[in-house]
Length: 74
Image: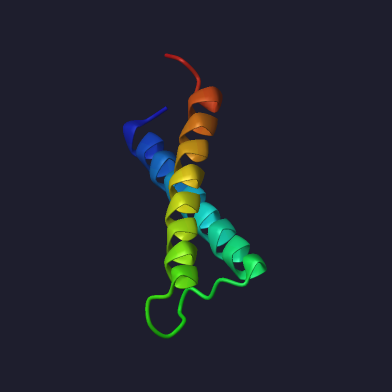
């Protein structure tokens, strides 16, 4: 596989994993009733921000694990 194509796959899968994970964290916060964009910095809004960050990081790691498993060895 060419280097350019490999880099495109890497970038795209990282982006999809991060955004998907961040959205999952956002939706989990909404389900719990934590408003991320609420007025001020309440405990619930900080918790929602943390969920989005953790979700994005987890999604990125899952995308990298998926890529490791599905990339042919040269």
